Length: 123
Image (cartoon, rainbow, N blue to C red; front, side, top):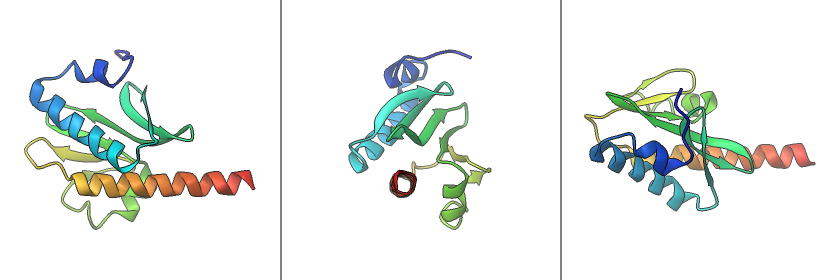
């Protein structure tokens, strides 16, 4: 598995069209949750909050994978019905428009859950 230093290093492995899609996801999440940290985990761009994984994302030959964890997949099941999903993953075909509003909603939900769990564990 290739190792990456940061988002730019990861993005540099792809063509311009893919880089633009990845950047749009990055910008959407950073605009919605400016306090997120960027890092690479599991060889994927990852956003963290309070040292907890918010969401991972990755580029593939035919899709972009979004990895918000299994709970988010269940919570947004209805809105994700047009996408292939598994326990903790969403596949967005490259041939379709990026659902940026939905990605944003999922990221905000994950932020809420992280902050909720942080409050619970610090009491």
